[in-house]
Image 1 (cartoon, each protein chain N blue to C red):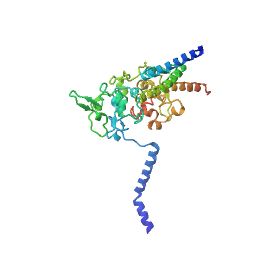
Image 2 (image 1 turned 90 degrees about the vertical axis):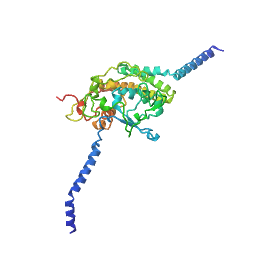
Image 3 (image 1 turned 120 degrees about the horizontal axis):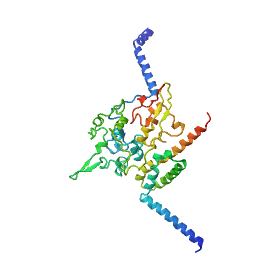
Image 4 (image 1 turned 45 degrees about the vertical axis):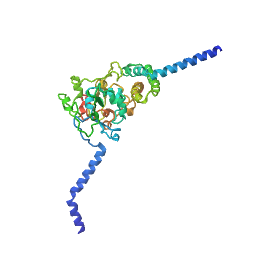
Length: 107
Length: 270
């Protein structure tokens, strides 16, 4: 087996392991850790820098995709809650941008 | 002859004509300004009838009393953490959801609050369906509104209770975190109060208190669903508030009635 093939095989193995770990984590409810981390930031979100808010929105979108795979009866409240936080982060970004635009407008 | 008879008839029935004009005027003004709703009794203000599937399943609809729940918990526990929509019937709760520990079932589990049924010491099952599915039934509740609110600071409308004062005086203590139900959150940093310009000449401006609102609601209950960023979602009229939009999402339904002008329009006019 050439070196290139060995490298490819290792990469495939790592990717499979990553996917399986993520799937197992989702199945065993590890999404809750990420869910609580994201939603727990709402209270102090107004003080967070724009980059961090953008990151939180991205993380929320990733988690929302994953949550679609858990039991629908459990997911509906979690998705509702996560969307509330996600939309609030976006609201903060948009209102900051709107405020900045207003300050730039000549009187 | 005919003309004279007609004149006599019209003269005799002038009041009928006046009545018709008045009636027409009332209908037209009702169309313009809205129709006055029946004022609910203090113990019924804020009640929500939930009838997604109840009647279909031959059971009385649920009468949810806001007054008791708001006296114990912050708004955001239910409307953010537990996923209850802000519109009546908007959540689409099913019995299976409650059994699975969602929505009402998150607390009504025989531990935190009464559940749908309970095993007695003799092994029988006692059912408590009527305590929630109570519309049209004569149910004696464990907590009576008038007994519970006796001695609470009065208000002019709604439940006729000044809930804010009741909390300030320590008569009610609202729970904002429930282990296993709410997300552990850090202390909320309250934004500054803001001033909202009134449109009516002579009407004092509004001093909006984030302090009063954010403690009960958090941030994500109002933003962006009720108050957004765009002009359309941040500039509003009293008419829209009366229709249940913006401040009217709570005020006039559960929170103090928006007929008490001076509770919001508080800026001194001099």
